[in-house]
Image 1 (cartoon, rainbow, N blue to C red):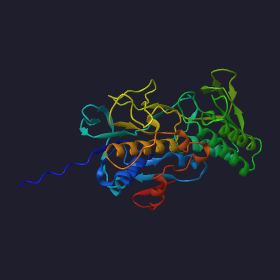
Image 2: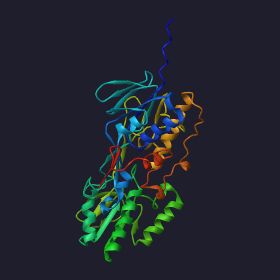
Image 3: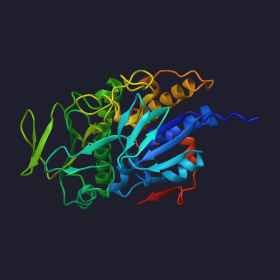
Length: 358
């Protein structure tokens, strides 16, 4: 008598190597166990957690780096080094950049966004001190050489909160150094600070700026920093000794998947990519306007629960709800995620699986 071959568990392919991808792996392990076969496909070998880089120009906290292959193995998943550039949803195939076709039963795209320079002449903040001249600007500010610095962000899809954080940290550095005649200013295209987070968050941030002696210029979209002046779309140029600008974000388009005019993937209430079956997306690659860690991990959890339920696991996936995503200013710079927080807290720092970079 020939025994029937055991059926292979449904295969989940996670494309990406950031916090959303890791949260999804953790959620799938908890919700589905060995009922799903999970593979992580990332063009990077490490998870590089950028929000900790906010304080680095000031000699503050560490940048978190995790070895993805070790993390995947520890979670019972496999790891593939490489990116995904195309998907054939009907065939259930993802195409790697080397041309290899990777079969999947469910695909979760968590590849993040492209980070692009936005304000010519300014110093771009890419998320860490070692990636540009932000550290030099802060050293000049601390030494009293630089007397007037602006922090700004482009209109459209961009990070927002780091500009305010950098300004607040800069004001703190000046206060500790006893420098009283230097000026720190935030220039924003918003009508009010952090308006995307709601009026309450904006009022709190406005109060913090005033307490820190930080000037605020609203309704000013930066165009170019030249000749000691920041030119804006409307209004007079603003004089400054240096300008630090956040980057502009652009979606990472994937052939075979629909996207909006900025390259971001449109998703429904359960993080399915609209117009496809068995394809999900989470994090900065989606068209949700708030690009924060809490939003990314929340979306990844929703997608993982929906996938687990579709695979027959006993779970009732709730839809994506921004109110459940810790995305306000009190959460920035912190690891957010139902599964990610306790998991990272249990890893040995300085070891092979996680290390801190100063």
